[in-house]
Amino acid sequence: MLLGKNGAGKTSILEAIYLLNFSKSFKASRDEDILQIGRDYFQIDSEWEHARYRKAAVNYVKERGKRFIYDGVVIPRVSDVIGSFPMVLQSPEDFRISAGAGSERRLYFDRFISQISPPYLRDLMHFRKLLKNRNACLKNQSEKKKYHYSEELEIYDQQMSPLMFRILQMRKKAVSAFNRELCRLYRESFNDGSHAEIRYTASLDAEDEKEFARIHRETARKNSDKEVALRRSLFGPNYDKYTFFRRDIPLINFASQGEHKIWLTMLKLAEGEILKQRSGEEPLYLFDDLFAELDLANSRRTVERIMEKRQALISTTDLNDLRRHGIDSAQSKINIIEI
Image (cartoon, rainbow, N blue to C red; front, top):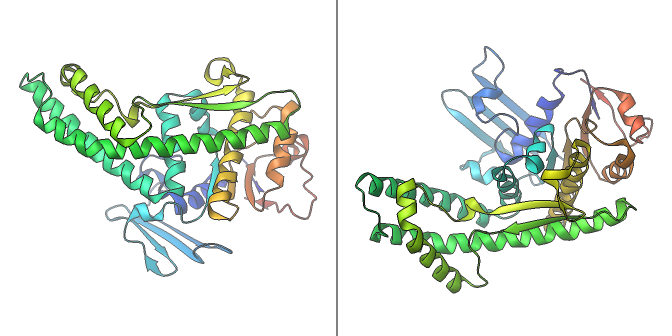
């Protein structure tokens, strides 16, 4: 348990741990935004038990970028860092996942799947690169007023189609796994008959790769004039939708802040169970400001689930929060670190 006043540095500790597994901060969009005022570098050093690496470090110099060094070896590609230490994070910023735009939910699932599947991450990065080039092609055709499905667009689509199909299949599998775990967690944690579900809607869908390629090609031809006019692609993984439901009601429209917090906490616990099943190892849980907006009426069983985990770091500003939510701070398995 990390205890301290606001601004004491509790979140910075969780941020540093998160960066070692995901290569970036969960708060700042740019590495330079993490720097202390007046500094042009940062250094993170860590030691791990029962992990893939014993020692992990990252240093960042403003003019040179980041360098990850695990067990004395420099990791050549930043993408190879992702998934090094299985972990689950919940922070106040995660409210955007359930209450924000669809892009926030796509980003969440992309990060999760990338952690358990390096091939998915490679396909996603390759797709984004091709998509950028395809959009540049559309812009070029628009400037020349060529509102047709050109040979260049067709070549891009032939390269993108298998990537898009594999991304689709991995997303379907991930949602299916989440729904199994969410169903179990809600059944075991609440006795009010409530249940949670994630529904995934792809902008293009097919059961096999050949059929997908056909649908993709026909859709591209049919919409080429619109895409050229708008100078951007109008379908693909970047348009897929994830919708969260509780009791068959969309969470984004009808849930209170407390209900969003409970739902997100259960989502994170489901994420941890899937990681455990895939790796055989229970992940490290990071909960930043867990008790804010957490509904007392439903939180105790949720907190009980968290306390069953092997290791969780929870930040809080007040020990009374622990007691209110059913945590006995005198338990031997709870270590309180005052920041």
